[in-house]
Length: 351
Ligand code: SF4
Image 1 (cartoon, rainbow, N blue to C red):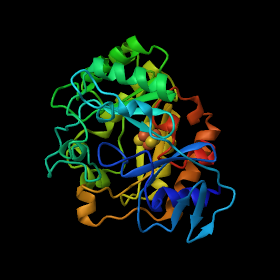
Image 2 (image 1 turned 30 degrees about the horizontal axis):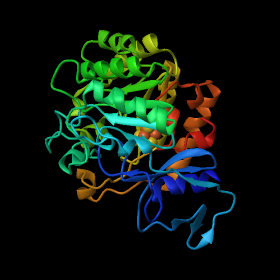
Image 3 (image 1 turned 30 degrees about the vertical axis):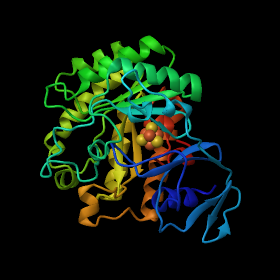
């Protein structure tokens, strides 16, 4: 598959449905999960896309896109199990890509008031829709993880959280969940994702709980973009992020720490690439992802649109080259979004 096709798919997505997909929730969503040319790919489900699938063939405007091997991801068997109280495992964690188990351990965010909320985020929309529960219990997640590994061959787990009002910003519950999962499935690599915790010692607690990798997601390094798109979160200073990344690299190791950088929020592409370069120099993997105007977000109500594919391709190509030159590729990560890579085109470009 050419990089241009991969970038197009990341932005335009595919028409129709996919057996594994998700609506709303934390991070990129409203997407379908496929395996293209052997790699997990998460693409928007978009009825206006020129791309669609017919069996294992990808078409664009009715013309077969040659040389792309398509494998749909089948609905995992663990989705059909329930806890003793009757909660469906599907409500507790979801399959992402081909082999990643992902959960949001606390589905609420202290910043979800409309004046404070990140405009691209729909973390509470899946809760409002009744498709998840507000707080996942550690022992339930351990049961789900065990079943997902045994029945569906899951190979890594991502745990994210909404931000709490506490000084830990939600990291303490994350640590409890990691500990429970690791006690049940010791060999399952786990990535945790959280804001910079107020007390940097929390990063060591997450590592000691058993987390293998950590994502501390800034989304943008541009202060104007941060204020416009993330009014609440932008009050966490970039210096606080830098301190948390540095401590995380010390604790978790180089290339086991990552951050999302969204393309398409109005940032200067050259500055984004420069910022990514500084992150790489620190040992932090910049996970470059196109902004998606998700249903239920303030951005969608604003009429915000996905980035220009040419800009995404250019930015991703330059960041991928820097990552490869530094020897920091996703294959070297134990767990996490960058290790999965389905929401980005960086893997397509060797990173
Ligand atoms: S990159 Fe992260 S959010 Fe995207 S499919 Fe993979 S684990 Fe899920």
